[in-house]
Image (cartoon, rainbow, N blue to C red; front, top):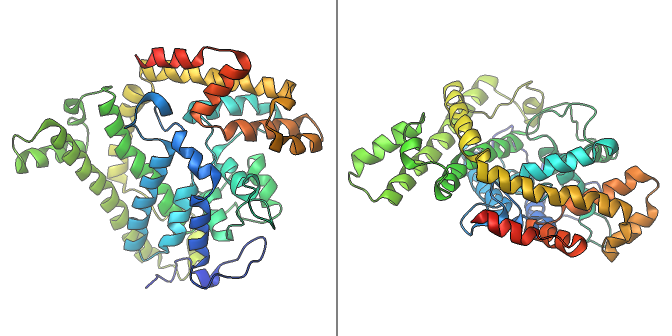
Length: 390
C-alpha cells in the first residue's frame, strides 16, 4: 500500500515521446530496466569511485557503488511506503554522468569546459538518458518518465539557475520544474548515496591500509558499534570484528533516516507528491545529531583517504589523461570514432564541438581513457600507474 504522497505510476506525467504502456511492467519498472541495459550503466564497472578502477579487485567502482545505493534506497523506500521502482531507477542512474577518474576527472573536465558552459556530472546524466544513448528506433535517449528524469536532475534539491547547459538544454524541451524539490523517492535515492559511500569508503580505506581499525573505533557512532561487537563477541577474529562493527554502523544510518522521515512526514502530513515538492525543504535527511557525527567521520575520510598522498598522486597522474585528450580531440576531431563524426560535421561552432568532445571523454572508462592516451600520445601512463600502485 503506497502512501498518498508516493509517486504512483497511474499518475505519471508520462514520457517526452508517448509510448504504449507495457502489459506487465509499470512505467517506473521500464525506466529501471532501460537504465540497467544502457551502455553508460555497464561502463560504470570500470569507472573510479575513490580508487582508480585497476588498483584492486575489491575496491568499489561506480557500478558496485550504484548497486549498493539502489539496495539501500529500496529498503528505505519500502519502509516509508513509497514507490520502490522509481526510487531504484533514480538510484541506479544517479552516477551515469561521471567521467573517468572520479571527482578529479570531473574537476579537470569542468575546467577544460569552462569557456563552453562547464561540466557537471549530474547534468551529464540527464544528457546521457535523454540524448547520448542511441539504441531505439524512434528517439534518442531512453525516453524515461518525467518522474525519473526529475529525480535524476534534482535529487539533491532545487537546481539554481542558470542550470548547467546539459540540463538547461533538456529542460527547455521538457520542463522538470527545477525550482522545486524532487519527489520523496528521489530524496531517498540521494540519502542512500550518502549512506552507501559513508559506509563503503570506510571498508575500502581499511583494505587500502590508509588507516587502522583502532582509529575507526575512536570515531563517533563507530565507537559504540565496536563496543557492542566486543561485548557480544569477545575475542572475535580481526576481520570479522571490523565487518560486524561496520555492518552495525550501516544499520544506524539507515534506521536514523527512516525514523526521522516518518516523524517529518507525520508532521508535514502531505496529501500528495506535490506537497513534497513544495515543502520548501528536504523531507528525507539525517537527524541533526547523527549529521554532526557524520561530519566528523567525513572529515576523517577527507584527510586520511581522499587526500592521502598515494591517492592524490594517482589521481593527479591519471587526470593528466583528461587534460591531454581534450585539446587533442578539439584540434583533431577526426580522431573521434566513426559514430561521432556525424555529430562533429553538424557542429555549428567551437562550443558545439567542445560539448561533443566532452561527451566522448566523459563516457570513457578509466582503462579506455588510459589506453587511448597511450595510443594517441605514446605515453607511458599504463606503466606509470602500475608503478604508483607499488
